[in-house]
Structure formats: C-alpha cells, structure tokens
Length: 485
Image 1 (cartoon, rainbow, N blue to C red):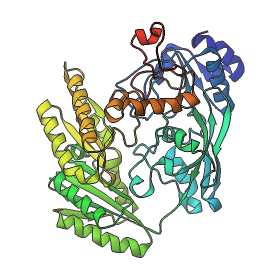
Image 2: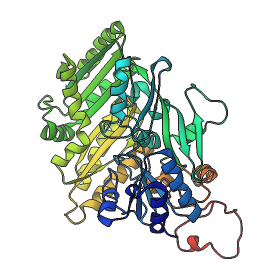
Image 3: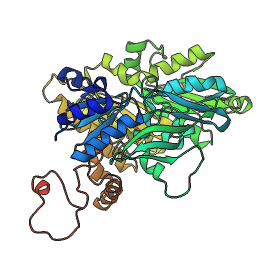
Image 4: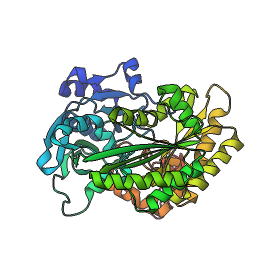
C-alpha cells in the first residue's frame, strides 16, 4: 500500500475531516519557511490528539511509508519539507495548554501551542517562557523542541533544550512513551537530550513539559548606533569580557537596517552602519549598575548615538525592527536565503569583514542580523530568482559563509537546524565516523528509516547493514541513493 492508500483506513479511524487528499489543499503544506524547497505530500493528516498521531504513525510503520511532522511551518531549514511518497502529520490543531504549575515553575503543553501564547498565559502568575525565536508570535512549541530553537534572549537563558524537562513521544513504531517529566533531571540515559533538537528524525513529541522563568523585577533596553560593524563587535566583546551577561545583545548592519525601516519604520538612528540592541533584566539594583557599564562600553567603542527605552512601548519599537528583519528584507529583495551559522564571539569583526568581501566579489548583497552575544550569525543572502544565475551565486555565497564559520571553529547551524538545507554541509563539519555514530542513534529509534527521512544526513544511510564484504552492491547503493556504514 502507498501513502495515498492510507487515506481510507485513516478516514475510518480518525474521521474524514482530518484527512486531506485534494491536490490544492495539499499544496498548502508543500514547504516550511524555507520556500526555496517545495514538495507536495501524498497525504496530510490534521492531528488533534496524541492518539491521532500514534494511529497515523502505526499505519505508516505497518506499510513502510515515510512520515514527516509539521507544526506552524515557520522553520528555516526545510525540516518540515514533506515527502511526495509520504504522509505529512500536521500538529497545529493540538494547541492546548494543559497545565500551568507556577508553584513548580512548569507548564505542560501540546506541540501546536504558539510560543508567545504560553508566555501570555503564564504572566499573570509571575512567570514566562524564556525561549523567544523571532517568529515567536507564530512558531509552535513542538517545532521549537524539534529544532532546539533559540532566540534573542538565549544568551542569558539558553536554548529550548535548557527549558524542556519532559516529553510525551510517539516513536516511529507508533508507541506512546514518556521521557522525563517535571523533575529537574530524570535518572538513566539522557534520552530527552537526544530527542530535543533531533528534527523529527527520532519520532514526534505530542506534549512537552517546560520550565517557566520568573518575570524579572527590572528590564532595561538600550539601542546604540555605530559607524560600522567592527566597532559594534568590539563593544560586544568588551561587554561580555567584563563579565556582564545581558539578556540579549542583537546586531543589525546597514542593509538590514534599511530593510527594517522600509518594512516597519522602526526609526533607528540615521547613518548607522550597525546598531546594537542590548537588554538587561534581573534585580533592579543589579540592572542599574550593569546598564551604566554597558552604556560606557558602547561609547568607548564608537557609539555615536544611544537611546534608552523609556517604557514598554519604546522597548517594543526597538525590538520591532530586529524581530521583523527576516521578513523585512522582502522589501528590498524579491528572494533571499536565511543562513544560520555560529562563530566564536571574538571572531565577529574578522568574519563580518570576510562576509563583506565574499558578497562584493560575488556581486551578491548580504544583510547581517544576528545574536551578537553568542556569535550566532543570520546572514540574509539577497537575490532575484528571475535573473539567470543569481540563485546559484546566492547558494555559493551561502555555502562560503558556512565554510567561513567552520574555519573559525564554529558551526553550520545555531538554532534553525540542518533539515534539508544544510545536510550537504554536514561532512564539512563532521568526519565519516562522526556521522556513522549519529546514524547508529537514529537507527536505534527508527530502524526502518521512515521518520522524517532525508533530513540532517547528506545521504540516506541504511540501518541494519553489517560492514564488510557482500556479494554485489545493495540496490540503493548502486543507484547512488544510500551508503553503507
């Protein structure tokens, strides 16, 4: 039976309204936030419960049909890209906040709960949910768990992995298991650490137990304008080097500022080659002392204008330009690639200069927006797909930037994940032995390789194959579609 053949049995089991087979409806789900890659799934299941997910996965497992989980579809690495021969399990209807346990600083949520929604629900109790991707108004907790998403405030508070204490999880065999819980650290192997950030390749989280963080006594936000990114980067190094850990330090270069102004009229200082947004939170006395230090380091490193948010409305305006930056570049370029590499913070000036040189030599514009405090870069590579050769040059520039990150001891992704977009770059960062070890973990969870196959690894490696001599090549190996390990 193929994926489309599952439509009848799944309609009978789950209800007709949860199963989509119409081509035009299926096209709604052909890509995530990385629209450069598009695949129309054979079948879509609109799951409304854990049992819906488990029943769908069991049916897929029985017939060897691949499946992919999708949340809000805001991912930027093609992690939720469907399979043309597979089932897409959409989790966006599973959006209940099941419990807010302020006494134990925990919340239990379904995967379709929107990131910002959880903070809004928790705030009356004096708590909030700290991870805050730029897409937090629309991205879902399940997707954040799958990709180990970060956000502007991950410098101080960490990534999603630092805030998940348990998951309800559907294995690739369709079994429902519970990993972790409300306790800070469950005994035994760290299976939760394997699941968070596994990009859907080990199974599907249908609930998450997450930490809630107490709302700070004081929050102060500063916007500093610099002549160029070198001086802004020097200010960042000075701040962190002094032992001050702000909640967030974000940087935007001149092209990113131009895009943000065109999109949301954020009113950043005219003539800035770079701006820093620095936010501190915590006890009022500590914030006041550190804020004076931050302002001093900014001025000492060439800031020609500093603004301090007078209230929440002005703070929101500071953040509006930064939070809208990815979408904003659509105002100055018809197409763009959002990249996501990491470098040591001290390498910022050198790497940014080199990105500028790569951009100039290739004739491809690059706007830089990034989490400066922890060196997580988000270069936006701009191009027009209508012009012959531009897309290819943009891809080359994008790859050169990732190579640059690796050369400086960094990583090909900080928070967007590998997905479909960066799988080909994995061998540049990891040896064959590294990749084989990762694949052994995947095979332990998913020996049939049906859970989000084709993601993360550069080629689909086979589970259950024994290294050594065999009579003739495996058919998939002979076809160049797989490799043995």
